[in-house]
Image (tube, rainbow, N blue to C red):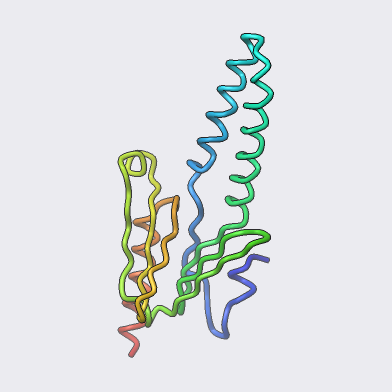
Length: 150
């Protein structure tokens, strides 16, 4: 059972789930390619590059599998980390804005950063989110639904 499912309030339903984009595996892949290149040349440094690829790959895999992003009919929820965990839960009625930032590569590959601004000046960014505009759209639709029900 996921973190989001474990922490649902009474009457709360999951509307949308976001995830990290595969681009977080780009650096491990680059290190692996460099290691293969040096191993064909007979260089002893290739072992170091394989180690770097393995360490960064495991780190990226842990980030990918332990990060959760969700929108419910009451909150925006995000959880990061396995051992050192960080979570954010903002009631939809307390969200003041959702900003999406994308660089050139993010536009091409479909990932970006989302910053949720809540009342009281809280600004929490989520980086390397897959389909950030869809996440924002789903959140804004739920915020509008909460405001319309008042």
